[in-house]
Image 1 (cartoon, rainbow, N blue to C red):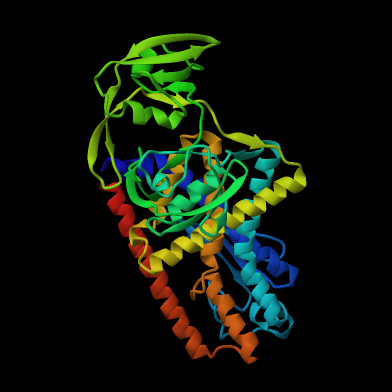
Image 2: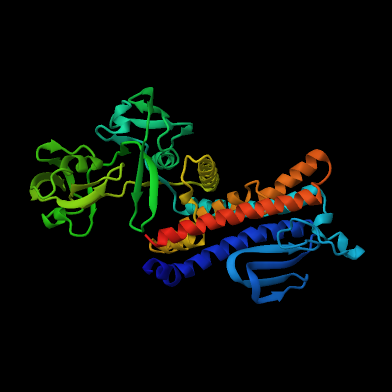
Length: 459
């Protein structure tokens, strides 16, 4: 019940704000391209159902906000309905026929349909370009720290290796490795890495992991047994930190724990994980001076990849900021924007293919409630979190609509492709059948997503 109340009290305003913006961008893409071909738009609606308020512009287009904020549409002259799937049976006066959607040449109709998804992708690209131009592109070197007895160690990798390629993906940043972890769970992956000046190859088998984050979201990924190689410098403390209570400060460089050297930050859990409640001696460097203190690691509960709960010792310290920001000129920022849009697009289609082939569970499909929840969670990170969510959802909205499913833009494009190849449109009977199948598929996905959303709230 608390989760449901949070959706309406905390998350809903952000959900409406984000979805309204993205729907407007999508539908404006259809509208703008249509106007370029001289097609008259009768209605531009944000939302479905009864009109709440609106106005009619000088060209005769009715702009309106409707009661159900779960999408929108542009209804062009001569459309049978808001989906622009079939022509109206009502005859048009001769002077209006040239402005009707279905009287346009095939390339014009295809361009109008493509305009919506393309607008979402261009919008995300522009936002990313602006971020990379003014703030820089987040970058963490792909040099890794290898966990003892993990999949990477078993594959022969060592701490200090630089990952060059993982599977079929070239690795430029450590963030690319993280993306691959969420796409491939237990499938063997070819790894190319650099050790010194030598390029080496091996194969790694990720270990399937399922975790729950602080917002109660289920995260599934392939554990590779390697972390980013980060110096063991204290960047901050979490609540009730025993290290802070023992006198350690931000900026301290950990040297050794009970005589064992701390080579990198993610080495700390390996050294103290089994020492919960037992005093350990920590030697550290502070401003060039060495000192030591005694810390009693606090006992925390943690889940392993098999879902088994363990008690581990923690110092409750955070690493120093390790993400760099690569500066870009305008052209470089645009190139980085294109790369990020492409990566997110390929991740979406890969995930959908995995769901369809049952290699990824269908409970990862989310609907309006999950989007609202994500919007609310993003708000806790401020405008940076909201901006990241807008970019991600804009890309998802664009590429989802390009799926070749009747009722979606991709379904219309598939029918236009048939028309281009055969030289005549699909029969009206087959179009109606396709719309029924598409409607069933979309409603089916919506029901599954809503069921998943409700289960998420009831956890």
